[in-house]
Amino acid sequence: MRNLNNSDLFRVMKIIRKTGFKNKIKNLDLPKDEKGNVLLSDMEYYIVLLMEVIEGAPEAEEEIFKFLGDIAGVSAKKMKEDEFDLLLQVIEHLKGQEKLVAFLEQAFKSAN
Image (cartoon, rainbow, N blue to C red; front, side, top):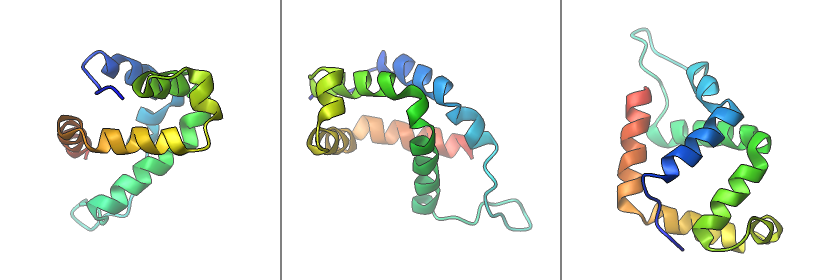
């Protein structure tokens, strides 16, 4: 498994653009209090975002499998045909990248 780097941001941005994820985030109808503060915990918010990603993923299926396969060091075909073993390994690997996690946390906070 390889770590993500700055050049991967461009691949991710292409996937985000293709799935329409950015517009979906902008148009989320989240519960808010009278001051406009979102009434979701961080975990609940991340789950909502994850569900939006999953919903849009079929629009960029090939790009996603190429990207995940590149991280795992396998072909997109192998990644696509895997029975979740590689996907779970990639997810665990990405969760362990402190710089990536810090970057995502900052990005999501900025989006609020």
